[in-house]
Amino acid sequence: MFDILMYLFETYVQSDVELLLDREELTEELSRAGFRADEIGKALVWIEKLAALQEAGDQPYLYANPVKTVRVYTEAEMLRLDTTCRGFLLFLEQVKVLSGETREMVIDRVMELDGEPLSLDDLKWVVLMVLFNAPGNETAYRQMEDLVFEEPDGLIH
Image (cartoon, rainbow, N blue to C red):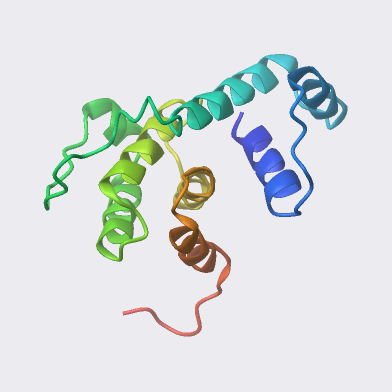
């Protein structure tokens, strides 16, 4: 399923090609690209749920009083997000790429992915997808793009 999400993100978002709005047409295109029907269905539901998080009436992660808090991960979340991934999410919050709301959206979308624990690179792509779909996060999206696509020179301290 993650491969389908990556394909869609790279094909439609990164290339400025207009996203097909018709689910049936999109399903056919993904089938022609070699993806299995059951995985296509799961990926489209994942995207629909991400879009639903943006609806004005349904913002389950909206904080009325954004104070400094520490995120305590559930056992299931720790199985999907190893220490490196959790540390990266904390780093993104500290440098203001993620807010508490967008962090929770990222975790929500990670937990809906099938498969093994997420690699750090896969997590970065999920963060990009969430930020791209979260209105008002254009600057954070650009910062995250820099973190994903820039090749560091030398040692990072």
